[in-house]
Image (tube, rainbow, N blue to C red; front, side):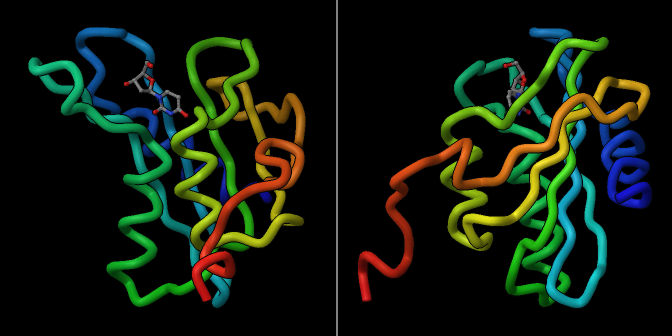
Amino acid sequence: MKDLIEAAKAARARAHAPYSKFYVGAAVRDEQGRVFGGCNIENAAYPQGWCAEPSAISHLIMAGGRRVTEVAVMGNGDALCTPCGGCRQKLREFAAGDVKIHCCTETGVLIRTFTLDELLPASFGPENLS
Ligand code: THU
């Protein structure tokens, strides 16, 4: 878990969040154990910005990863920063319900671990369309 948290922390340092000043780092592990980080990237046209989690997912996908097997996320300070609703759904596309999501302080101290099922119960996913 340490490598994942370190990757999220490094990603957070690259956050582009001049408007909210809420700097988010996320990291995802793929089915091969590889770790990918991502940060939030805001935009002067506010709705065009995006979250840290999809940044991390896009790195995983572009490296040929298919599944998300573990997640870490951190925002500002010591407050609990869980993935937003949209990010929970984006993770759901690639992660099983028992995948762990580690929520950390900005310095990388683990606050609480959730499963995706806890954060997104009774979810809609790819199986619903098969
Ligand atoms: N943010 C994330 O990056 N991930 C989340 O799950 C929650 C929100 C970002 C979006 C925006 O740049 C800033 O945090 C404030 O909402």
